[in-house]
Image (cartoon, rainbow, N blue to C red; front, side, top):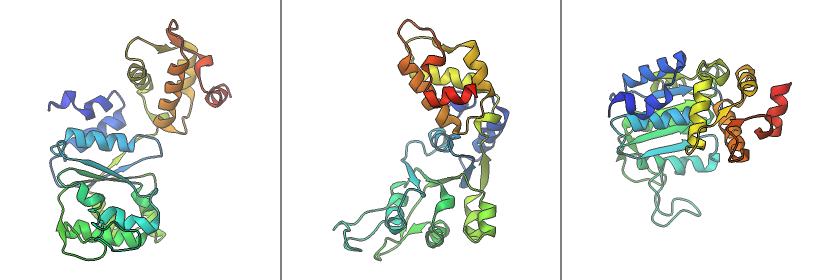
Length: 261
């Protein structure tokens, strides 16, 4: 796939910091190097992870996403590594392969890796070292071959110093660090807005009013891309068929209040 037309190119629309991260990632896409995406909540870490998968040599394989912060500690082991039938109360009789094995031939994306319990960090480290998974309840190790992309909003070096994250796992995951800038630091907000509006209303051209565009540019966007996308989605839904511009009446009330503050 030509690099100018792939999923990464669609994200690379003008911000220098994001461009640098994407260019660095491109150089290792075909190599067995783990990627660690770092950035605030809402900056698009999973979006980048999916684009990396779709632009890489494993794009025909599965993309398996796991939010480590959303899984209860009691379930994370069986969810990630699978289990043998009858391994615990409530287990399926035929067992389950686990998310790591489901990513065979594709990409495993571990979101919020910094929130993974220490005991599970040790299990994950062993899987990465051995390139094999032993299901909960025993059995033979099952070889796994997948690209690994992790993401976190936490400072993992500080977590290591606090005894909350394994240093050996950190160096295993951090083959290449890809920091994503928060929206308030990005220089491509007009392009982002135009891209999101075109996706939301592909059948007709829509733009922000001049006053609103200036207010958007001055806003800090604490929710980053997620907040911007949700606001524009709502605005497009409130836009009448004969209105070419999004103005103040089309915004969610809380955002309009923040922009005017």
